[in-house]
Image 1: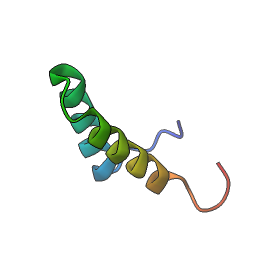
Image 2: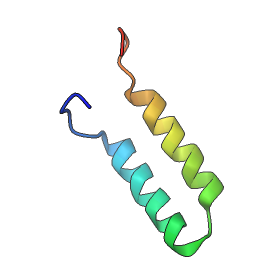
Image 3: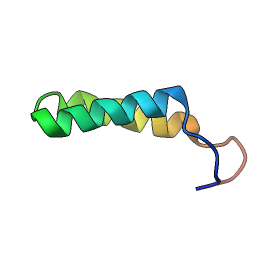
Image 4: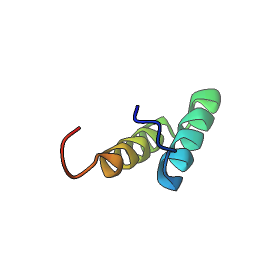
Length: 47
């Protein structure tokens, strides 16, 4: 990790994933949300 703070989308997705893990419901949607947030956070030039 580069030391940057997670974006709002990443924080929101992590919270949804955590809630889904605890309740057992909405795991599929939470995983998609997490994946989308992670892809959006990839820098344009290199990794």
